[in-house]
Length: 341
Ligand code: KG4
Ligand code: ZN
Image (cartoon, helix red, strand yellow):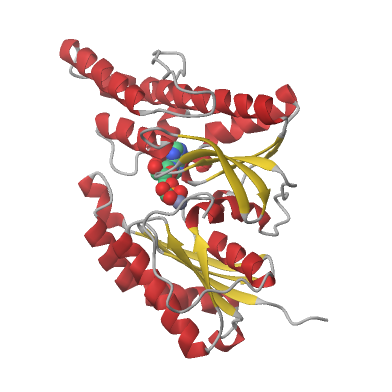
């Protein structure tokens, strides 16, 4: 029998420090340290994020290795997020990964964070199935909103993307308007469960077939709330569930409409979702229903692989390792990196 491949994945692109150990395509550990500090500022403060990564990275990596039940010497390679993300945050993971790979004299593998969100679908898990190529992936996170045609593990084509805000931003900024803390996406999801999605109507943007725009929606929500609060100062508290349900409904209608356009245009009916917003319970429900209603086969990532995590970096590293696709130690972090790079 062939020797198993153990890869340590490290993720530090934004405000989560995460480390994961994978054995071939199976995850052995996936440790995530969230940074609470940003909540009171209403968004991620880059300098604070970078400092928190520096504090967290050693214990998070140690824990991931311990939980996996292996020792550092068993590792076959180190995979890390090269970008896209916040430069100060990326630098912490990049330099840590480089030093560890050098110290252990094992290969270093750079991973594109946006590809990794998609490649999380290739983690071997009894609860989820793996999409066949080509498939369409709706990548929805705090920084990106894209419809990607995935031709193979590392060949991807952007079919459409946002021309302004990302969908995660639309959730977070709407939540901020309602006085909710950052990140507001999960809170909107929570309150929406108790509300009426048709209570309030928001205008959907008009953009190209497969492109997105969320900044107008955000402004529409802001004006609506300001107007209502003028006549009833308690409007938000009295209607929070209905407002959240209506915002979420509008956003998900937009996403579903674009996916339908993508299926029409490409003829591909294997549809996956990825990224932090794919944790949203309603988009998950709607995608399940689409199997029945539109005959799609849908791929919904396990909850723990939706928001930023190192398991997705570890699986990407493993897939690159199989192709001997290693990085040079002189490689540098990249704040801007397309899913196609
Ligand atoms: O992928 P991710 O963890 O980080 C980026 O790469 O951006 O995505 C974070 C985004 C945030 O905007 C957060 O509010 C959103 O994902 N999010 C959600 C939910 N969980 C996380 N949005 C809506 N509903 C959720 N349940
Ligand atoms: Zn992400």
